[in-house]
Length: 226
Image: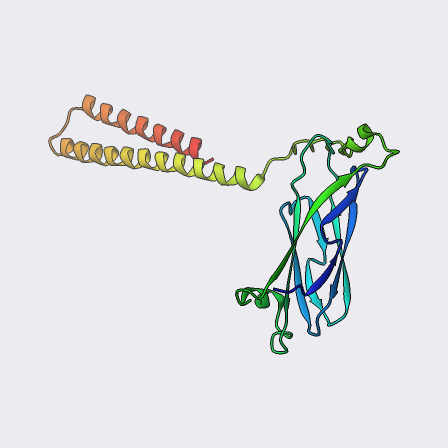
């Protein structure tokens, strides 16, 4: 398919160091047709480059510049560079010209898209030592970690304490209920003994038992309630 754009440069995108700061290369796109053309720019290394704009529309005979910004990195002259870019272009009908670009590309007919590939090359200025070009940007010292807060989440503490107190209170209530049942049984047995004219010694024994039980109940209430 015939080219829709005159792309400059047409084979290589050159980035000149030093590379410890952002390096920008300009890609010029000229619409050489009599129709509106849409384009988008792709790369094999999207995390290493920032492209503005990375897509758009160009009217017939018009030109647009695309800034391709290489992010700072540690340059190694011995490392092989395989970064590539591809410019895709497609003519627009009057009906499609008003649609969002994403929808236009999504519905592109097979064979209607023209691809142009470019390779990236890195150059170090002749007066720039390789060591300086290879120097990575100094990383800012990591901020000292903030000291752990000395205050404690009171909501958490309250929630946990309430749960523990509730469990202890339930145990106390169970014990009190058990003691009260035993007390009722003892009263019943005392009443039965009274009807049989229990000896005074036995009566004293039961009175002592009542006293001990009420002391225990009072101790439990003071421990878990007060």
